[in-house]
Length: 205
Ligand code: TMP
Image (cartoon, rainbow, N blue to C red):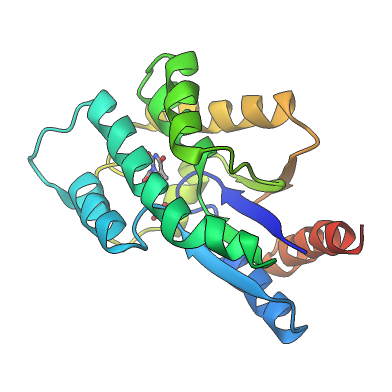
């Protein structure tokens, strides 16, 4: 049974750790599963990620950012997400279209309807069955990332990251059936358990 699960959240929320944990658990149970992430898994996506995260000094407008994230997404859908879902697999994706709404619309203040329209064009109907938001206050996430060199997004002002978080919470509120909001301040084990309860109930359904 195919299932498309996405992880979302601000910087340092623990998405990568939790998405890997879910992947391992499903693999151990012999559930066919694929773990991927945005941006930067396909050869095109890797180049785009380098420009967007580390293109120090290179100007990238919010509109260019929107298009580049969606170009990377369109390629990932074509190469990985759609074929794996068609093969009946569970596909876990660390970030997806909601990241673009949170960061490029709420964060960069691009028009919400326009961002949604561009996302929809790139996603071509591939919509998550479940989106897990690891919710964390902006400052808390950064303290977890101390010691790592900050990329273009991590260097944004605290207000940008507060808008991103508010954006995520608004999205989750509008579509409570699709979203599972988890307080990322809890222990890793507790978060893993909450996520597993939800995913296993979907797999049984
Ligand atoms: P991360 O995967 O290490 O979190 O890095 C990806 C960065 O790119 C992160 O700061 C969020 C940002 N981003 C956007 O701004 N828009 C998007 O659509 C995506 C997928 C990521």
